[in-house]
Length: 211
Ligand SMILES: [Zn+2]
Image: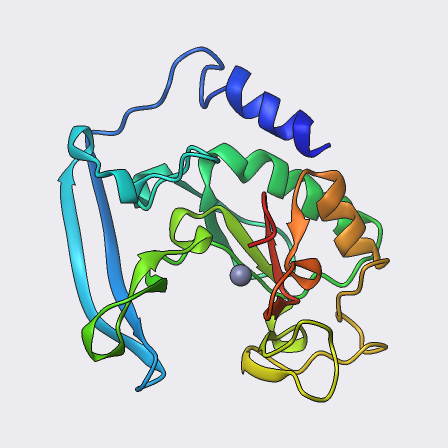
């Protein structure tokens, strides 16, 4: 299914399925995540011609950008509207609609957040890299029950919660490998952050790579 979505992205760019959409400008409100202060700093409003898009402002694997002009507002019953990359919005919307129709507890969804929250690390502890959320190419589901953990190659007591709420199996809205939400999102072409390799487990998180 992941291959199917990738093929769809190549064959069918938004909106006319034949023409690439080219906004006039690229604008976004950026910030840096500071690892010492543990909060966002250096808020700034960026605006430049779309033709002057820098390499770091576009994610090559999804074709999504940090520009708000490339995001689409998704409005669904029962959850707060959220912006997601236009190239992925149909897949995300359809997957969430199906899950809601099946009675799955999709309680909170967030996607586009154009901050510099990834390494490399700059001076004073500011993170400088854009994450998949900065491109609107990652979706967080039920953040308050599916935290991001560090020091967590396998889930256990040593894992350290660094964002969102604690992950407890058996609670409504908690995501697990075999739950309907994780299965539905995988069917739609997304990988789950609860299954990524490495020291972090991001139980709320879905993207094309899982990171
Ligand atoms: Zn996420």
